[in-house]
Image 1 (cartoon, rainbow, N blue to C red):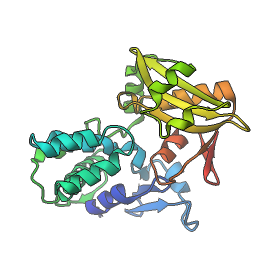
Image 2 (cartoon, rainbow, N blue to C red; image 1 turned 180 degrees about the vertical axis):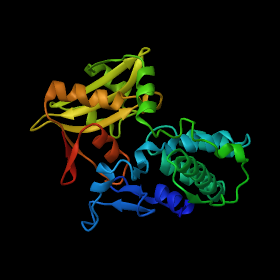
Image 3 (cartoon, rainbow, N blue to C red; image 1 turned 90 degrees about the horizontal axis):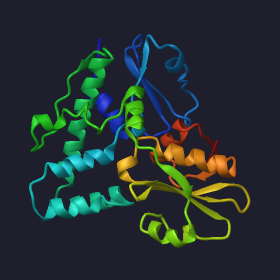
Length: 283
């Protein structure tokens, strides 16, 4: 018996951050649990390590890096130049899609991304000894080698990988940003006004003479995280977790409002030890 590789790909592409999916060897099929459907229990995936193996979460797959890889493989020209500019800063995914659509590249991007996921799903099955039925990759202009990305930084699937990347990160000092330097963070902030206020504290990590990331906390009532930003160079290396820890050490138990519960921030916060309380996250 074997599962359909397309089913694995579909799950990786569509599942949200709150859904746990795993392969049950005894049942020979994928199972899942979502907090929105109380009729399926994922306890077996947590206790039966021999017969159950979890699929990677959305947080473990770096779609931003896939956009970079897609752009790198485009021919030189206006489309490549504008797509490269579109993915800088906040709102990168929205701007990337809009720019790709303007240059009639959206279908090519979706085919590229799906083909990358096919490669990833196949390797995941091979490593975990999960039998599968092959899935033909989508039609695309890119070469076969462009999709063998399992070992690329686009995918982070093991704790060993994550720990290795954390060890590579240079030690950054995290300190409160003085008023005269807050203007330097305005281009990176979700809203420049959030940096200022009587009860607003801005902690930032400094490296190589610049800011590697920052966190904004409002403690007018109880400590609430207003914004958290990490420069691309330092992402997935423990910087966000370090900023949260420093803020909690300085201001106490933190509460975080997540505007979009499907965003990858949910998985990130859970990995940092936070848990949902209504639509908020507290530690």
